[in-house]
Length: 383
Ligand code: HSE
Image (cartoon, rainbow, N blue to C red):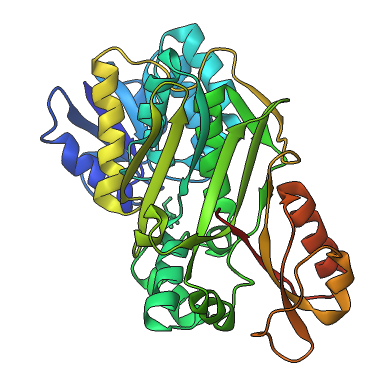
């Protein structure tokens, strides 16, 4: 199957290279920005790609919503297959694109949009057909895992760790999406859509921007390891979906995930907990996931989203957990039932451990305190 590639950056160039040797596949034209078509196999004319009857599939690695959405729509309208590594595109327009694919017979797959080379979505899409998926969770952002690992294992400060992650090419062009948890949230939303047929909206994300080196030292003194975790689960009224820092005991599998690696797990009624770990970002791992989708299309796969997938508000009010907090003394009354002050905070601040409270409740209290000018750092305790 001749496959056109959209974009010739880190991932696009990797896809093009692997297409040369992958079984049953071959590289087609590569779409690049206007004026950048400096090889005969590159083009800045998307219409020319669609006019070429030998092109059977399009693999997108350009990122962003425009013109990618337009290209995706037109590819599927033409009856061709569309494979993408673009989490934003799928989170925004996935349901609509799937509807076009269903109408025209094209395939729409996006394994590379969540977890890079880690085959989470691919396996979820298979597993949900015969099992009942109950929850999915994981370390889904390589940049923040790299930063937390460097801060914890080398005592590096936040700024230095971020600079290293950027220099190594793990971070998004604007790393705010990484450190705020938004990138991991986009990925877990896709996992929820594949696992449950519900693309959750209005989810919660607390990133690592409020984690200080002192917090890390304090957690280490308690024998705890901090990771940024994305979670989604079936609830009584729908699905939960959120991202937040979580503290693990040292022997937990999450604590052993080093550098930019990802660890993704799902739990099914019949299969129990299944985990995958590996490179969640970078040229070859991400390109390999795109190729895996294309190979899957050759074997007959046409979709990852369940039929009748809908979007719905996330339900984060049910699950309760305890949280470690660092906050100004003046705001301690927001947590009247928290355990008495622990040492280890700077003057004017306290460290507390809350009673079990809901995820929605904790995130709302933190937002309220921040709105009033207070600086709060929080992390859930894995128990
Ligand atoms: N910035 C992302 C990460 C890239 O660090 O995981 C892969 O999606």
